[in-house]
Length: 73
Length: 240
Image: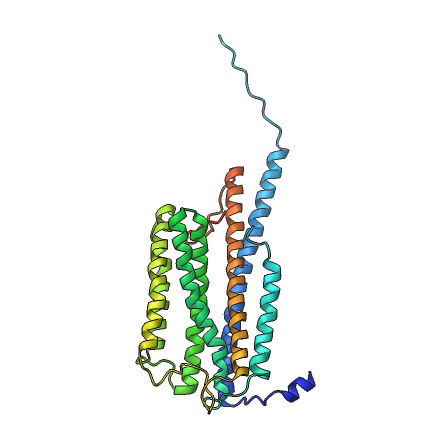
């Protein structure tokens, strides 16, 4: 790593460096925001799935109601 | 179905972006004319190319939707445009940062490249309200496809018009003091382009997988006759 840094051109982090850093940070920030939004969606889907699984299990546990026989008079 | 191969694609994207960033900051030489600020272009230009190609791809998917009537193509078209709009935001912001550093202004109105990209971006920004304004899903998909085709055809025309316009301000290529693009810069640029394109593909696949899962949950809810929470988006098409 040290050898790589030594061979790399010196990064002029003066006035220009701030702008370059800003541009790359904006890119990373956009990616992070996107991933955060997707994570929130994923959480919502997980919650919905859990709810549906509970709903299905509840249905399965309910005893089947026997149909009434119609008695003709 | 859509999630198949997402993990290797994500890993490949991360590796490609890490490689590209390493090349930008540790391998590519400093530009003779612009100096360190030119490093922004390794991000800005691939983002712009990918966004514009993504808009055209959205148009191609829209053609396939109108030809086949298969709603999956509409979803592909929607997601392609959606991702390209996000990339478009990054293009405008990174471009503005470069303009401020290089020209001293965040925006220049007499520069055809900037204004034309803004026009394309704003045009696609109207895609969402246009789509959302139509209630019937079939009509919504059809009209959105027509929009995507028309706008997608406008993108290369717009690009050609800008290339033909003579501008002395916006740089056309990466340049050194001798002119032209040296091999190391070209190599770095191509790796950056590949990395950004790979990221676009990964995010499109990611978004499609999320939409597909959401669609499956809705189907399951309908099958179980469970009450809907009413929190899902009606803008995006369902993918089953």
